[in-house]
Image (cartoon, rainbow over all chains, first blue to last red; front, side):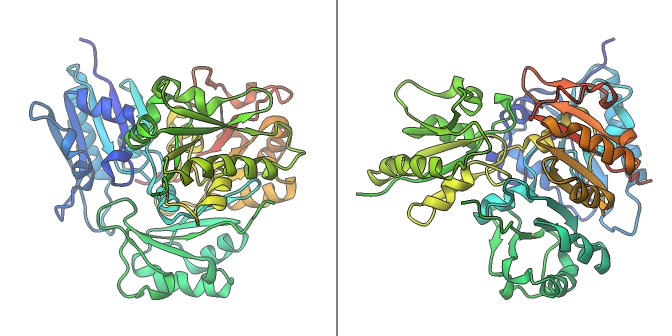
Length: 233
Length: 233
């Protein structure tokens, strides 16, 4: 029996219109759709493409732990096994992945478990990091600029060193780390250039001056952006 | 008279199926489509969306100099003036931009000239930098990794310093700078991890082992990728 194909499908940052034509084609034609779900009930990936899923398609939820204290790897073992069952009997499976599958994406863990056994194709998606620049109307990098993307979860010294040499930067996974980031940016004279956005492209997107952000009330889905100062004439 | 709206439309790395649904909708409904053209005749942006353009749409080519020795800014002055004429009389204009408009994109120069005078919306697109990771089947960044995107055109010392601290890196604009990059990567023990791709997602895409690349024969549109070594258990 011919095995099915595995598709890692980037579905973009949240606006369903930011799916690619290719992602849309694959999602609407495969017999099986898999997607991460959180133990706390959050199922954003499925919500983004909800209007495209048909009743006859098989859905495979992939539960992941809500707490970052617990390793998610045993959960990916179980999800990969469930997906493999469908591939083994010839059913193509699309695994939904918010943003881009290869950039901090959940699909990479499925990829590592199955890509050597099944034909696998990765469909790039719009990352929320870059979509934020579009939403903010902020040109990000010119010409010879270096862009660094970094999680706010890093320790303060590392963040300081990386930000000190970046021409442009995107800081992700803000949450309770906002006060630390603020202090570093002020130290480096980057605070005045910094832009703030929450949940880029989603209906509940928030853009506000970074000086008005309450450090005690910042979502994990917030991004701080330092656009390049290069201004070619 | 109501002025037209300006759309900066990211059209992705080359595969027409990697346009977003939103980019496709805007391109197929606006009365005016503008796109960069090179003096040497290269018009990749238009070629990507050629099948979507209808005869009744007005096309506005934006000539840009082929040589990097000449400033492109006077060319953008002329292009912006031509686009403004259409906006002024109420016609919406879509400006095509390969990849993502805000990441080393040509649209940023139009944005800076017109966004304060006309309603402007930026549609994010798939950047060739990230599409390369999908095409290479190379998970790029995990968890707390820092990703740096840098042009090979930088001087060797800067490249060395930035690559020494990046968990994952994407080096763009290779061309005649390949030998310099090779030497730096060997110095930093990154050469064995490096991956090579030309023209990601285009019909003439090339993937080959980086050890087989002829340094004297590397296109500007080549990318070298250093995926993260992080391997969460």
